[in-house]
Amino acid sequence: MNDLTPDAATDGIQEGKRLIRLGGDKALSLAERLSERFHRLTWRTPIHGMRLKGRYPLKLIAVPEDPIIGDVPRGRALIEGMLSHRGEHHAIETLDLARPVYGKAFGDYLHGFGWLRDLSTVATRAQGAPIAEYLMARWLDQHADSVGGAAWRADLWGRRILAWTSHAPLILSSTDLVYRSSVLNALARGARHLDRGADKAPAGPPRIAAWCGVVAAGLLIPGGDPRRAFGEAGLVRALAASLFDDGGSVTRSPAALLDSIQLLASLRETYAARRIDLPEPIGAALGRMVPALLGVAHGDRGLSSWQGGGPVPADSVAAVIEATGIRTRPLRQARDWGYQRLAAGSAVLIVDAAPPPVARVVEGGCASTLAFEFSDGPARIVVNCGGAQAGLATLPPALTAALRSSAAHSTLVVADSNSTAIHADGTLGRGVAEVELSRQESDAASRIEATHDGYVRRYGFLHRRQLMLTGDGRELRGEDALLPQGRRHRGGATPFAIRLHLGAGVEASPTADGMAAILRLAGGALWQFRCRGGNLAIEPSLWIDGDGRMVPTQQIVVSGEAAAGGASVSWALKRAL
Image (spheres, rainbow, N blue to C red):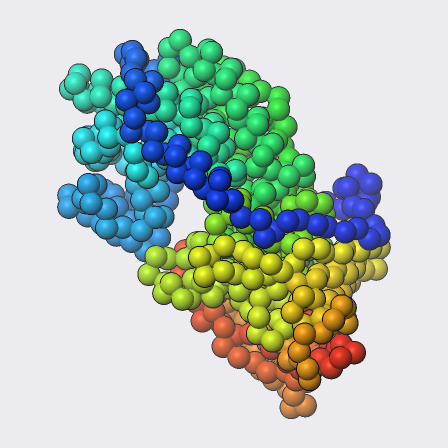
C-alpha cells in the first residue's frame, strides 16, 4: 500500500481553484438538545421497559472472530487485576460500578467492553474467562436491569454487542445456567433498546457503532432476519450522515475515521461468520474510507494529528486496514474531507485545507485551518501538538483545551487568537467559513495555495498560505501572507506569528545571522530552515505521542507585524544532508 503516482485523472486530482464552505458554527439548537434529553428520559418509562421484554436466545447462531489485535500492556494489566486506559488505572476488585469515579474515556472503555479484546490478545481462554466473567457479572448486577445513564448509550450498546458476540468464549464459558441466561437476556434487551435509539446517536462513530450493533444482533440472534434488514438500512443511513462522499469522516478527525473503519471491519467478520457477504453499500463506503484514512498518514503509515486525535502508530493503523481486506493507495486530494496530500521522494506533506468540522458533529474540534504536517521517511519534521482527545487523563485540563488552539498547530496565528473561536463550553464558534484552494501538479514540483477568512471579521485580513514541494521531496517552500479584506477593527499594526512545531527528536539550532535554523533529525539527516520577512526564534513546545504522553519538543516561531496593507513571510525547508 505504498504511494503510487498515477496520472492526475485516475487519482482524482483537480487542478485550479475551488471554494470550500461549511457552516462550522452551527451547534445543536435548543430544540434539538431538549429532544435528546427527552429521549433519554423515556428510557425509564414503563412503555420503554415493555419494549425491552421478550424471549432471550438460548445460544448465538455463530461466534465471529475479532479481526483486530488488542493492546498488550492493557491486556497484561487485566491479568494482574487492573483495568487501565488513557492513564487511568483501577483495580478490578475495588472498582465501584455504582458510583463511578473515573473519567469519560475510561467509562467508555469499561462499558463498551473494549477490554475484552485486550484480554483475549494476551490470555488463553482458561486464563481470561474467570476475569471476563467476573467483570461481566458485576456489570450485569449493576446495569442490566437499570435502564439509563452512560451504560445505556446507544453507541456503547452497539460496541458492547460486537464485543460480547466476538468474545463469547470468554464471557460464556461458565456452566452456571443462570449467569449464561442473564448474559443472553441482556444482549437481547440491548438489541431491542437499539432498535428504537440507534438513529438518536450523534453522527460519526457513535451512530455507526449503534447500527453495527443492530445488524450484528440481527445476524447472530435466532430469528433476527427482520432486524438485520432494518439494521442494514439504518447503517446505510448512518454512513451517509457520518461520511463525506470522498470517504472522510464529517468530524474531520482521522482518529474518528479509524474508529469507524474498525467498527465496519468487526461487522464484516460477523457477516463472514454467517457466510454472508457484506452488503454492497456498506462495502463501498468502507472502500472509500480506507484511502481517505491513508491520505492523512505519514510515510511510516502512522496517522498525523488533527482534530484532537493523536499520532496513531503505524502498526495499529496497519492492523485495522488489514482487517478490512482492502488494499489501496492514499487519497491525495480530499474534496470534502479537506486534507491535501503531497508526496515526493521520501517526503510527505499533509495540509488542512478546509474549515473546522461543523460544531454539531464533533466534540473537541480544533482551530487548525491551513496548518500542515511534514515528514521525511519515518521522521516527523513539522507536526501539530495534537492529542486533545487522545492525551492521557492525567494531562491538565487547561493544557488539553490549549491543544485545540491555532497556536498548537503549525500555522499562522494573528494576535495570539484562534482562526475559529473556541467557546468556554468547548464548542466551536465563528471564524473560518470559507477556504479557497488552488492545486497544481508537475514532475518538477507540486504546489498548493489556500486562503481562509478566519481573521477577516476581527482584524481585516485573509490568511493565504502557499506551499511547494519539489519533485525529489528535498525542499519545501512556503509563503504566508496577510491580505487586507473588509474593514479593519483596530488601529495600528497587528502582530502575527507563524508557528512550526517540530517533531520529537528534532533539534533546532539558530544560525549566526538569526534568519535560519539547522534541524538535526534523530536518524542523522539535516534540514535547513530559512525565512524572510519576519523575526525567527526557537521556543519550547510539546507533542502528544502515540501513547497519549506529553513529550517536550521545540518550535520555530517567525513573528512580525502587519500594517494596513498586510504582510508577507517567505520561508523554506531544505534537506542539507
